[in-house]
Structures are given as C-alpha cells and as structure tokens.
Image 1 (tube, helix red, strand yellow):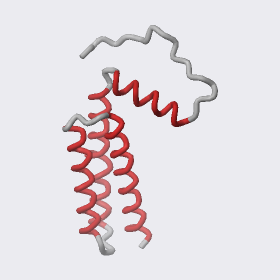
Image 2: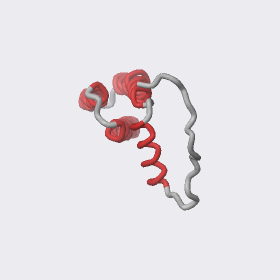
Image 3: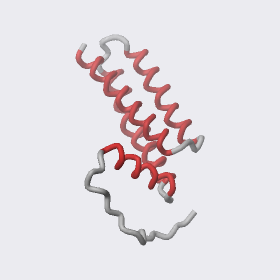
Image 4: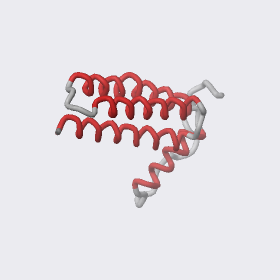
Length: 116
C-alpha cells in the first residue's frame, strides 16, 4: 500500500456530457483502485456505529409507540450487515450500496416510528 500522497499525473477533467451514473462509477473506481479503500470503510463504520444506529436506537426506546423491539432488531441486524461487509473486505461498491440501503432503512423506520 502506498502511503505517500501524490497528485494524479494526468488530467482529471470529466466530459461535459457525463451523467451522474458515469461520475459515480468513476468515483467508485477511484476508491477501489486507489489507497482510499480502508479510509472509506473506516468512515462508513464510524458513521454507522457512532451516528446512525445509536440515534435510531435511542429514538426507538425513548418514543415507545409500539414496534420498538422489531425496529431495534432490524437496526442491529443491518448494523452487523455493514460491519461484516467491511470486515470481510468486500468491494467498495458493495459496501457503499449496502450502507446507503441501511441508511434508507433507518430513515424509513424512524419515519414510521415518529409519524405513528
């Protein structure tokens, strides 16, 4: 692993007609091929384990309108899914997609829990 920070030697300009999917794929390819893999995985774990899951569990237990145990179980299982995918060194693309799905699941559970 290269620990020296170096700027790319080639031009990093994007074509003017690049859509969001092309830019996303270029960004993911940069993360997978560069030395950013472990940085991204650590960032995902920090956000997941220090912000998303604890905040959700606190809201589920503080505002107990029912279904708190089911939502807490889903939150813990989804947290362990992100943890195992990162510790298993799966691709960055899969880890980011799983993290995004996990955040959307938490947001849906919080909306259901608080709007009930």
